[in-house]
Length: 121
Length: 108
Image 1 (cartoon, chains in turn yellow, brown):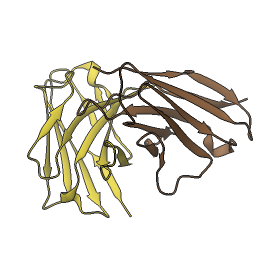
Image 2 (cartoon, each protein chain N blue to C red; image 1 turned 45 degrees about the horizontal axis):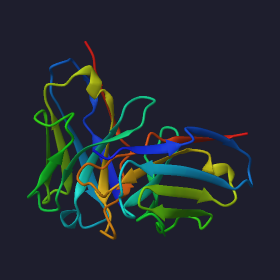
Image 3 (tube, rainbow over the protein chains, first blue to last red; image 1 turned 135 degrees about the horizontal axis):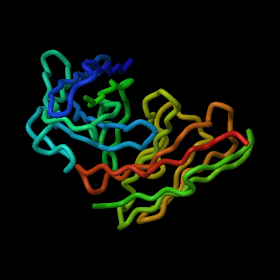
Image 4 (cartoon, one colour; image 1 turned 60 degrees about the vertical axis):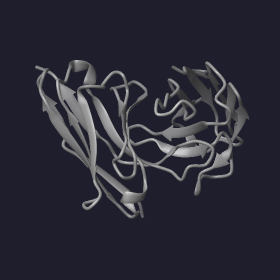
């Protein structure tokens, strides 16, 4: 069965950096686009970044562009998000999500359990 | 950017009730609309994609309809496990995958 397991969250000071990871199993990781979505405590969902199946294209929300970098290692079935110049507004649970088979648009058919990132001094 | 607005923001209902949740897009998104369910402390779960296609394994009491700017998620007969927060998401203007603000469905 499909499993996505995030790790790497924690507490970091403003201006600091953190890398979160998402280990995938149960599907052909190298065949699917992957995404990061975050959720601030008690708030809704915000798409953060996407990467194509082969890593050839990467996309970012305006709120993280220039500070976050999405990447993937298809040989190890792992997705990453390098987060630099973090601010308190980046405090959130970060989910990785697998892209579903494209049918009239994209959707996220499997999600990890999330990893909490807290930016605080 | 496309804005997604859900209504109501919260809703109280009883087991067995028929419930509808609305989602409106700020511009035409054809049928590029997905619905997710999220329970407290858990990850979102895909219910419906492309406005009306039921994700595998999702009970048939869930259905979706609509196109253009107005969409609806319907639960035909509420079950205890359906009390959760529901989000719509547009995938028309990719890669900016905008979510609605959520609708919290509570037990009456």
